Image 1 (cartoon, one colour):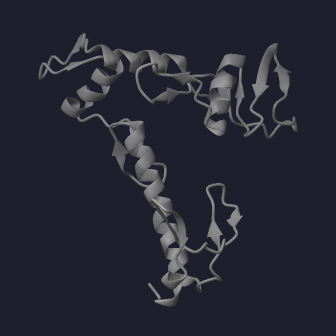
Image 2 (image 1 turned 135 degrees about the horizontal axis):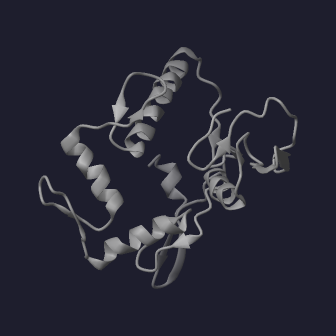
Length: 191
């Protein structure tokens, strides 16, 4: 059984419960993610986790375009708009608006890199840096696959990886003071 800070269980090999259900073990109720195999003791932790899958970010910053999946992250972000920087680094005296920002900054001085890549020996100061790095492992794999494949027929793909049909372009038009003018000569000249 693997557990994290949110008391999530990853190993459900002992039972065949459908995702999204609740099961009981030794008097403990486990709430099962409908998207993956993780289980949580608290329903609120399950809700927070599900937002990873759905990309839902219901907590909007009232001062900028940013949105967040977790309310506490929004609360910390809003502090960046106040200009108040109450957390000071004792090494270089740089100030930060959140304790989390200071904690990450201090790793520059200490050299601590707590986020290890599961695919190689590299370690990172932030989980974001690790996430970017992990993606590079898969980009190289995809590039190698693409180099060794024959070029398939050209199919455009939209954001949801659904093929998008080729739509013929309309003739260009020019709108002037006297009205709309179709420009059939545009194609004739091969411009």
